[in-house]
Image (cartoon, rainbow, N blue to C red; front, side):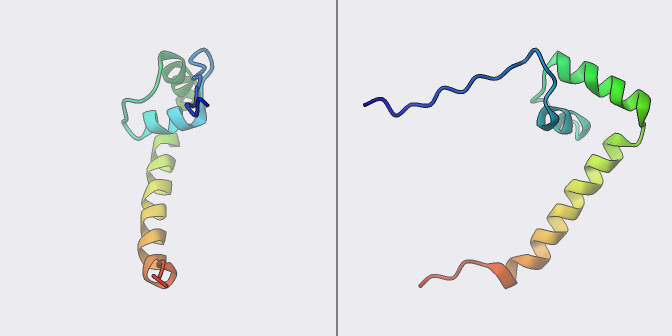
Length: 74
């Protein structure tokens, strides 16, 4: 029985996760994501700042919630 997974990435359409990566200065995106990112920046130049704030908030939330929600070994 073959348990391998085949995942197809559609690089012909922009994807929110790859655009988010682009806003944060990442390299895991494609030209279509770059083009849509430029269109989004034309509509809202603060979009990359919003992505950075979300990332910072998530880190703070995880840090603060971590001790209270940590898994405990039984």
